[in-house]
Image (tube, rainbow, N blue to C red; front, side, top):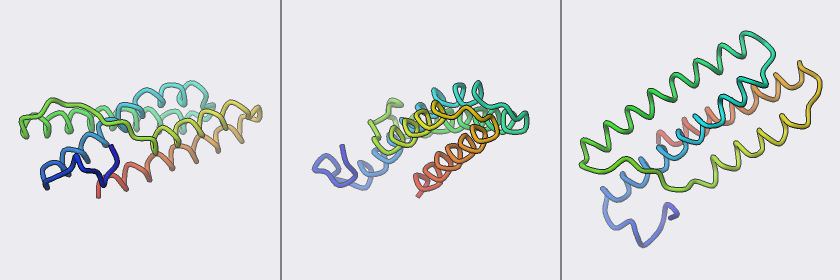
Length: 122
């Protein structure tokens, strides 16, 4: 379901759709961060990615609380944007042999994910 669709008829529908979008994105990020942590070679980068994973888990808990307060079951709606960001990060990281370059690529991927999360907070 896109942002502008006939399924969104009220402000509540729009709010719930945005929450579902965020919930899906956070779930995908939780799945991808362990792979990034495993590939990272710089200990500061590893620590930063682990911190991001912890924060993302907290964000999922917050979203679950919001769904509960709205009387809705926590669920996500497919979001091609975050899927594309994660897919590109996986593809790029899979092609790099130089550890310093790989770490730089992982930083860039983490920044792209973070920028997406900031944008979703509208």
